[in-house]
Length: 296
Image (tube, rainbow, N blue to C red):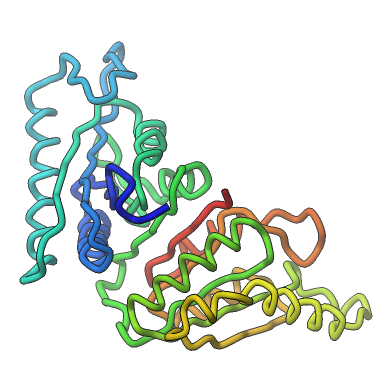
């Protein structure tokens, strides 16, 4: 599906936090690069017992201070967006204040978004810090790719650094491969494709011949990258194989990347081992933006 066929375009979760500002700044550059609209969405969760919920896109009877606070959050996000657009031709900019519980509202809105963008952590309804609980739910249940943006060190990734792709041969990994090639092409940088074939790193302990697994891993990389070179001849690909825990090696390699792309659910070196934990680990621990995709 093309970038322009989704109503919300880049759907950015805003809550007035520093992490939210970082998400808006990243989304601004991505939207300009892709020529898609930006929708700033702020979810006002219930904080009063008996407060009516489930009224998506309809304003309940709520205190004026809460309405004013929600409008302030959106206004702040718009200012951040305009600052980061600079002299670029701005895409269409929209905003929405949704009155509901946070996670269900964002997951529902993601049905009409090309990508959902969120900070690695944010503020709850009472201004308390939410350490990734919303982000964790989104990367596993959203209906579109989810970009998790970090702001802890305030550093901007090197625009000449490669895009890092985690490959495991799953449907989610295939979707990640398509997006990673597109991102690398648009940015004019190298793509580093990594496959790790052990979740626990126990092959030497068990006396197993890791060379068989290495050969299989090389085969997986070759199969998953086949055809993409023809579609993106401008993208130079670096292939990386390792016998280690995927999350640990991806995290290490991400130190030299500007963006990480992984699937939300995949299979590890042992059949049937789900790797939802890999995407969670990368989304929360990486210092650069991480995009998590889901298989169709």
